[in-house]
Figure 1: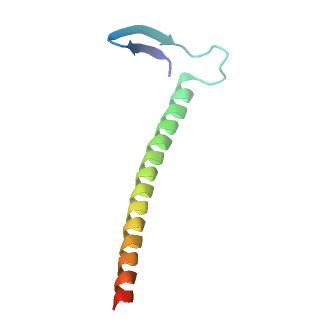
Figure 2: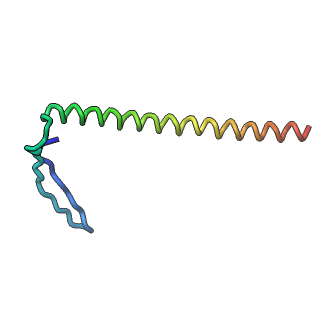
Figure 3: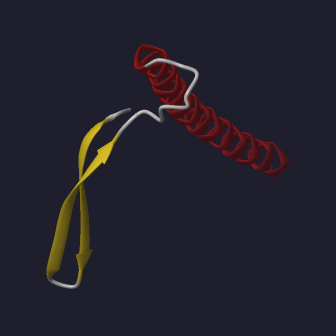
Length: 80
């Protein structure tokens, strides 16, 4: 989004910072409002992808735990 941003770079114990001004390209066929809507949509997708990744990790954790339990139950049945 257009605006003024602070850019920081750290090297060793030294930190450098400067202001960076971003402006909308005058050749752009869209408005700042259009760009804001696009940015907001991208951020929503980013959040949803993060939530989905968390859900997949939880599902995989439950799957692994169930497979481990299944293996233990199978070994107990063979011992009896």
